[in-house]
Length: 317
Image (tube, rainbow, N blue to C red; front, side, top):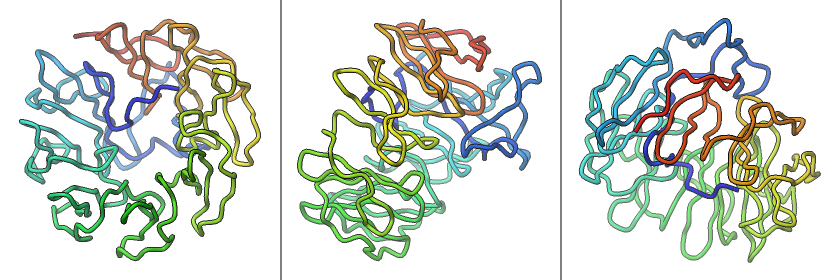
């Protein structure tokens, strides 16, 4: 599996999306307009923005390739809930979709994946972790050794040597007891107990027992499936723990919009939920689909393809 952090993308072109889900999809993160019909804007009238880099600086384009926020940042990340993390001089802050600075760059560290989630984001002040709202107000005071993003109303936090979960009031709702804990996705969260990983529900009940080594299984369920490695090949489990796509790939990432990026030998392509290859492995790297596009590339050069495998932005440095 590709184990690079989720808050970063490949170094020369990051996929950045800023909008609510398109249309009214059947699956939670699926957009279904055909390539022939072209992309449709979300129902609320906003359009997705994508970040690109040129001459060492990042900015944002729309889906036509028009630059809408100038390329002035050292780093730029996903728009989520109307704001995007940007970095200047190693400090992180947030801008809105017009490019206005909402929270000035001042934080050395923000929680993975570096974007607002459910109205809050974790930041580190000194050596303690707390949570900001979208005005920059600290609404949960720094008091934890570490923390993850809010997801489905809860956030994993570390107090002492163990991890537990808090709600948005800062109340501990699942007591610290895990050696590592991750965000909830589709009602389940990965937790490590000793050297094994399993999944709990929001009551703290263990739904899938800790049977897998942390490096042999992914963290999050995506569209009902999670990646797992057996005999040095990757496949997918469902929420009962049953293997539904036989491990046969060198690396995989999670499903998004009905497709998952997989590595066969040295190249990346895409499979559907039946395990069928729908875009042949040909890329040196590939991110998942979002709003009908995927960031793919060769070496350090990246571009965007649609679900037919057609480029809408050719790979660029």
